[in-house]
Image 1 (cartoon, helix red, strand yellow):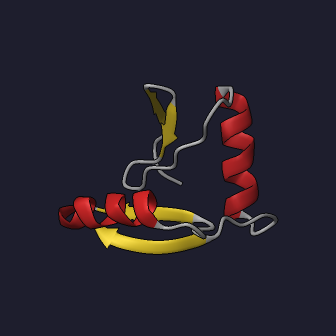
Image 2 (cartoon, helix red, strand yellow; image 1 turned 90 degrees about the vertical axis):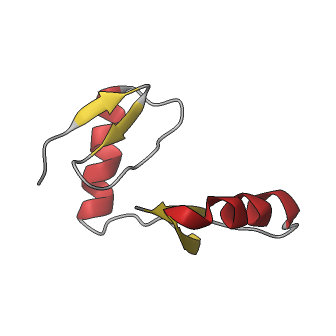
Length: 74
């Protein structure tokens, strides 16, 4: 497990950013532990390289039936 830090309310490991809205730090860590252990999952609808941020944003703005996360990969 990487080093964990909090930046502007987001809990993130060294290389991957995981955003959790409206969560206390300890709650976010508990959710991350459940995700890591496979006890819960998060649906990912699409993955884009960071260079395609505009395309990812367009998908989120124009899709009427988007279910899940849109992930930007560094």
